[in-house]
Image 1 (cartoon, rainbow, N blue to C red):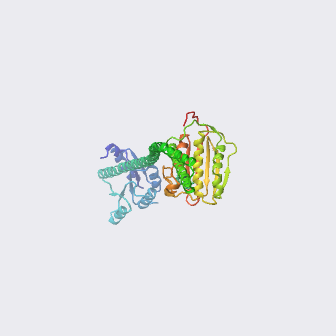
Image 2 (cartoon, rainbow, N blue to C red):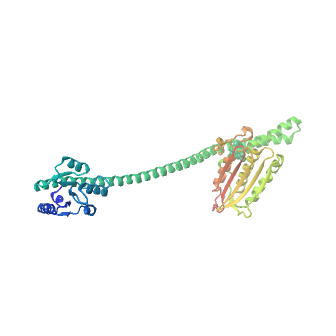
Image 3 (tube, protein in one colour):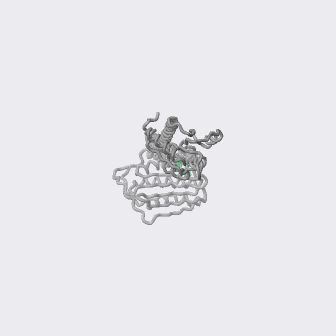
Length: 414
Ligand SMILES: Nc1ncnc2c1ncn2[C@@H]1O[C@H](COP(=O)(O)OP(=O)(O)OP(=O)(O)O)[C@@H](O)[C@H]1O
Ligand SMILES: [Mg+2]
């Protein structure tokens, strides 16, 4: 319901060329306590007054000079440009029903016949204003609700974006955690296998040494047929090979211990290249050295570092077959030294890449490879605070990259 006081404050515009009509109506309205009444006898001013006042009700005569009531209605419609224009109450002396009908069709809300019955006029005005104000309130509420809906939608959109961001963040964290877990698993696996390997190696080493020594004595002490000599020699070589393997197995868990000392890595690499020189020559493998000019000394346990270089050179050698090429590069990157051994060899199959650091993983057959080279090397480099990565493209070649910190502050033995 609309408050009566609110109705009395409604704006009313009166357009009638008869000033007597205006006077009568105005006084009736004022007596009824309406407070915002504007009137004109010049219908040409109706539109501008309407625009200025935005009245809640227009009391409009139909028959007027210059512009008749229908034309005024047209102007008002144009001003509002939609259906929300104020209700128009037509005041007419016309008795012709077709004119009244036309007024209603034009957009008048109601009409009153002249001469006017003032009490009826006041009743109609109050009713029409009540409906008008109710409509206005409803419109305002609708606008308010629409505004709230827009605000809430914007809030929800923002919350949704935030949620999406959080989900992405969580997924990233979970992936990182998964990676860390996998690394931990890898380290644990290496460590467990390493312990097992070391204890087996320890058990093997002594009896093997005994067998080899006996064979050596047999070799030195007696004259033998050539074929037997050959067999003894073969047995000694095989014992050496197995002892070497046992030694490597032990290293896998605990490589030869020692205190890291500043070492010129170029010299250490050159020593290992000397060992491999013959093999490279025999297999026509072209060797290129790309050493950085000033390589700072790096704290490493010398024979451990050399063992890693030898393992990697051996892998490249075996991957190259005849007529391949191997390049050794050194670089200084930030606070690290990088040693890269690159070969143009057979490369590593994609499906093998995740297994190459596993102990005993080999593609070289049981006789030729033990599958310990990379896992031992990895363990050594990690213990030095560095990293060992292998990149490879099958059919193209492989890069094994050692990274070592220049200023490792380790004095403890490794
Ligand atoms: N430079 C390389 N080119 C091609 N394959 C490689 C290379 N380095 C490693 N691999 C692959 O990784 C596997 C594991 O290497 P790893 O050095 O650990 O063992 P291995 O060479 O097989 O045996 P060993 O114990 O005698 O070194 C190899 O069998 C090979 O398949
Ligand atoms: Mg190897």
